Each structure stands twice: as C-alpha cells, then as structure tokens.
Amino acid sequence: MTDLRLVPLECGWLSTAASSVVAGANGDVDLPIPSWLVVHPSGQTLLFDTGLHHDLVDGVAARYPLMARQFASRFNPADRVSARLEDVEIDPSSVDKIVFSHLHFDHCGGTALVPNAQIIVQRSEWTSGHHPKLIEHEVYNPADFDLGHDVLKVDGTHDVFGDGSVICIPTPGHTAGHQSLRVNLASGPVILTGDCVYWKEVLEEMLLPPFGFNHEMQLDSMRNLKELRDEHGCRLLYGHDASQWASLSQSPTGLI
Ligand SMILES: [Zn+2]
Image 1 (tube, rainbow, N blue to C red):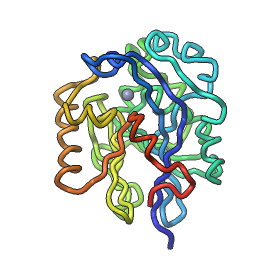
Image 2 (tube, rainbow, N blue to C red):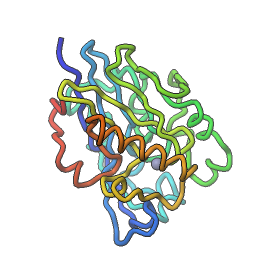
Image 3 (cartoon, rainbow, N blue to C red):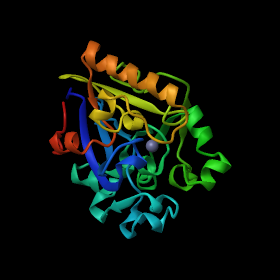
Image 4 (cartoon, rainbow, N blue to C red):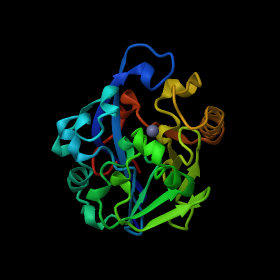
C-alpha cells in the first residue's frame, strides 16, 4: 500500500489589481491558478479544481469579456490540466473524481479535459452556478462545468473515499456553496482552502474581497480554518498564494 499523495498542478496565472480581489489592498498581484491531484492508496485519483479554460491561451477576453476588464491571464498549452496530469503520468480520462471548491471560472475551466470523473460539489454551489443573473454577470458559466459528468451534490461535510482520508469541509461565504478539502497525509493533515483564503496575509488580517456571497459567513469560515491551523495542527495550502506556491514541490511525488 502506498501513501496518500497530494500533487500541486500549475494551471495558469491571473494578474489583477490587488484591490479587485482584496478590499483596500494596494498594487498588483499575480495569482497562481492551481489544480490539486490527490492519489489515494487504492489507486483512485481526485482533482480539487481544474484550473483555467484552454481558450485562455488567447487571453481572458477570448472566453469571459467582462472578467477581462479585471484580469489578465498567462496561460499556454502546457498549463492545461490534462497536460499537467500527463506530466505526472496520470491519464486525464482515468481520473475518478473532481471536487470543486466552487464554480468560478478559475476553478473549473479544465473540466472538459477530465471527461470521465464524477463531480462532487456542494448542492448550493451547483444551484448558484445555474442562476441566470449570475451567469449574465459571468460569475458563473455552466459551459465550464455542466458538461454531462456524473454529479454528486452534497450538503455539508463529505467523506470522499469513505475512509476518513479526504474530507470536504464546507467553507461558505466567498460563494454560497464554497468548500475546502482536508487531505490526511501521512506527514499530517493538509487543508486546501480554495478561495476562502486567497493567501496567508489575508488570513492573518482577516481581509475580505470587495465581492462575495456573504462576508459574515466567509469570516466564520476563515476563523474555522485558522483554528484548524493554529489549534489542530492542520497545514493550510491557500487558494492563490504566489509565495507559498513557489515553495511547493511540483514533482510527481508531490506531498506525502
Ligand atoms: Zn472564487
């Protein structure tokens, strides 16, 4: 039996004014866009989010004209989640599960390239993702995620493999059905925060985006993750933290 593995996959970058993602922040930020591969000891594979859509080789406006007012992308064919999987010798068509933190464009763009996985998403997120007004404003685009995959809609905490090794933890606020993923590695528990926490300083100072579903809910979710980190020994891997990202091993072995 091999150990549970967690492999970070770099699926492009976005850049924007920091104030467009964190209220009151100064300057510009570069945001890594991760997908995270989990390899279970049984051999089953899971992705947490799928990165940017491959249309973004031609820029954000090629797919999301409204988002292009705020975000610029750096994306080349090697950043497709399918190419990143092949780099670590995983056939994209063999991936068993995709867990979505949420359905914003930078978290589900590569879904078409992982055709046979079962999607696991909070029910409230799936509902939001089909809301006509939110689609009109490009908050969601069902063409990114509603592609005929088997979809398991969950309500609250969910034990993905039924053995306590990988657990969906609801962290709502950024969106209605945002969730984080706890991965119990042999070296200790890790939590993929998704966009509940973009980067480390945001959590230290409890900073919020200028948008979001519910700020009070997000603050509660952030406090919950902070407590898991500070009092329960969980290592947090943040959603878009360029300096933490640079420190992670992107070898096929990943984190064990
Ligand atoms: Zn988001």
